[in-house]
Length: 227
Image (cartoon, rainbow, N blue to C red; front, side, top):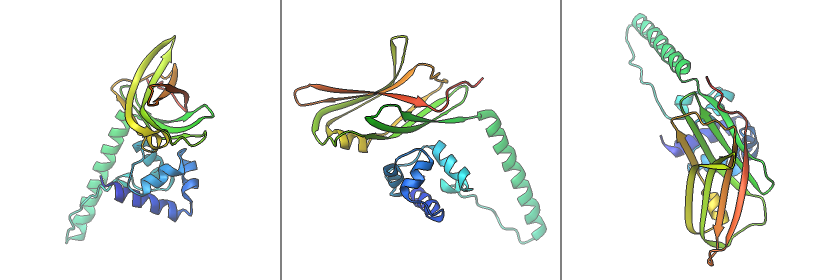
């Protein structure tokens, strides 16, 4: 998977549809900075967002990911037609089988506070859950202070019990730089029920170990209710 090639294809899709980066970002619930990162090959959208892009603009997902299907050309036209028909039937059967048995559902994650703008996505079925967050923007005054350490934790809070889903930390970094490079992916072999409160905690420690704490409630457009 070549990030630059995928980024160029996403950029071409956007240009072909006469959209600015901001307009394109608004359609898929992300920031225009995220779109810029995709197009420059610095980051990739989650597979769920890639699927939404392809579905909306009638683009082949395999082609976007750079998966090329090589077909052996037959000199005999009749044999070529028969071979093509068989391949189409087999591929259709495989795709149908995968869709029928995987039955993945997709949702989006957003922040519900005024201080931060967060967007991400969730893909899940009855046995697996994948959470992806890559766009976090602080809406307050620009914070360029270099902190001794910044920690982030994604957790579910239910009945006064916190269940940690993800932890990350970086040293000697400003909040702005930390958020610019922020990327979080959580994969679980179970269906995580989001019936509790989903929170992203960001704690910035200055050189004197004084902590500035942000607790950001997140909302989901869907929840795990697959049976």
